[in-house]
Length: 343
Ligand code: SAH
Image 1 (tube, rainbow, N blue to C red):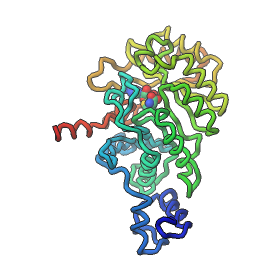
Image 2: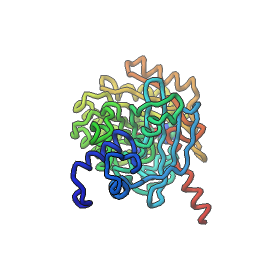
Image 3: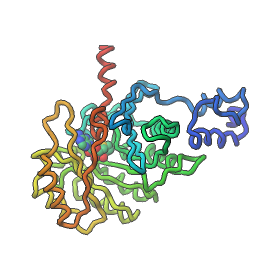
Image 4: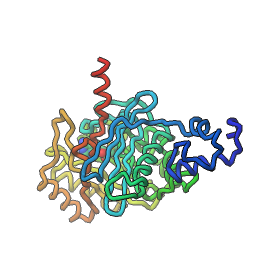
């Protein structure tokens, strides 16, 4: 503000517009001098992401946005309304470098890390749409944020942690979402999990395990060759001890690949007595993949074996399938469209 020749309290005013009233449009900033509004908004709240496409399904309660960043990078976010809560699923990177073979984003590779503001903006845009009643079910608020869009959040550590603080600090510093309602999901970058444990945040940690044994996990989550199951889980238990929060173990059920009864038993042994909860995800097949979702009966048996051994387990719902907004489907088809146009 000083550089712009303005009194410093304008920073607070502008922050209240952005995080409190969810606006970045100068016309609505009537408490700012009319001759300074445009310049202030342009300098401090530049438009970072432009909605390229918006797709809805599930009766208007799921909405996917394909964003184009200033440098042309594509990313996606999904807003999901449930009874009593609205979850914003955000991207932390454009693309992803983790190369998990069952994930659409993993196939496309990493374009770049997103900035803190590019992450926060995805949630603010959803909050704005909800506040204006643009989503089925009437006006509402974003209550939950999950870093389960494109990218590996812990590979963009600094920006993601800063984004968590902006999302969870109260207005005017942030959006005022509860830390407990934010989930950081990771392939298992063990040192970064330990670092996260030391941040003194109470966000939920989700670990995408997908296999209890290193032999299979090396294939499903290639970074496992660097940090193996035991090391990843050690870091996760460190996180649980530091925060008192139950770790969510994500497990995509892939037919005849990781859904055998013996693997359920092996998983139960790994988690016995731990502060953990298993979230089974029916695999969402990606185009060209040789894999498909487990047979429902096999999945039910897998779930029952965990439950019988005292492991809390739930099956994740699969929102957004028709709009490629379900987990692992965020491949930003626009990128492909662009290369077709230019190619
Ligand atoms: N990179 C982070 C966060 C993004 S992926 C991570 O891996 O956790 C969010 C979740 O969707 C992860 O659990 C991931 O394994 C899962 N996922 C990816 N592709 C999927 C697919 N095709 N079907 C079901 N789940 C998938």
